[in-house]
Image (cartoon, rainbow, N blue to C red; front, side, top):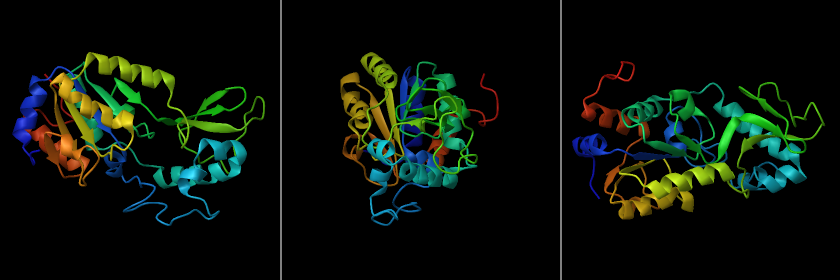
Length: 261
């Protein structure tokens, strides 16, 4: 496992046809989004006001039993994130996608920043917070933010409880996203980036382990040691924006706002 070697990583990008970017909360932390726990976390205490862990409050089972409790914390999380947007790391990933059109992004994040930054081949494995749907009749509506929601939102058609189109704790992953990931994994990748994720979920760490079978190199961008750190080829112990900016400069390409030739 090598420490920062931006020129070597830039060469790998130039040589690759298919690149997979796996991203987690760390990339959006550079946009000012808080995590649930840890440094800058919303819920550093052991339990919520109601005496349950935040993971229980934000679970599918709690939403069904006590929607007012789950929505209380959904609204808190959304309010803490409101007004934030994509950052340079999201932009540079989208720019590399333009250079390498067979590349994909697999993200755990529900903020929609990759899409807003220009990524098109995108697997949002945990869903996207900007869409609400009814739990009874499946009516859908788009929500730029939750400023219009005071407590539990109800469906205008059947008065069922509305919920965000995201995977809550204890819920199954969306089948279409899982199927898309499987299709791309079968095809394989030449290069894998793991950015800002602790990789505790098997479907997030699996591509790193599959890289050996693909004969692909793996670059991890994360200030801390994670589940996959012992298995990567390059470890950049930095935040996402800093590392991606250094890699972009090593690529020798125009500034992010300039056109690519």
